[in-house]
Image (cartoon, rainbow, N blue to C red; front, side, top):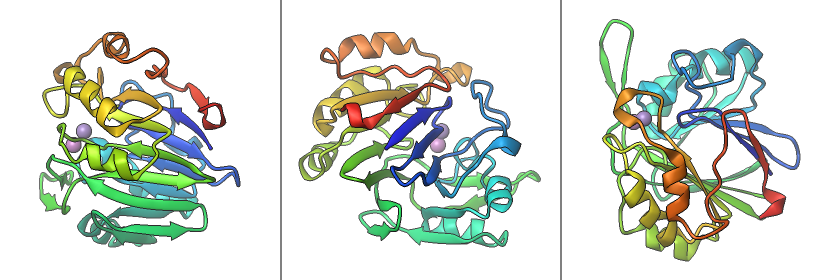
Length: 230
Ligand code: NI
Ligand code: MN
């Protein structure tokens, strides 16, 4: 499994079978990203929650690529109303797809989508994502605070790589994310959800320096990482 980071919470995954997955494809309006909606090739979109900086360009990308959208139930129903192929899930549930297994985990956060006219849509519970393919597991925490059940997630899943928000203000900050990294027992930890907006400004290197040696993995925007190294 190969992963790449694209600013904010955007992560792309290519499985060994070369299935192309994107998590939280916030492209337009994401000042950090290197991606362009019209150039994206995607088979599957996974959404952690309904906030606009995570749903992003899901509808356009899904239509263009005839992609499957996997999301928490209420968000999946909402996305499905746009004529898109959706797969609803909920926290604690896992499902084995042909490209790997997706399991949603809890996240302590909000979840709603704001339409262009200001209408706010309820999109269910926010979540994190465990994705396993070819015996490698990644965890994308979505937007969340630190929560002690991360210990349980770490005990029951062997996490090769975890994407953790460090921006503070709206999610965990660096100190809490450091504890999360310990509790999850992840082999590698990649900081996400920082520097996109003034409210979430952080120096990610400070976070990396808090972690044990070789545990932190600071990915530049567009940088790839091959999980067969972990
Ligand atoms: Ni959010
Ligand atoms: Mn967010």
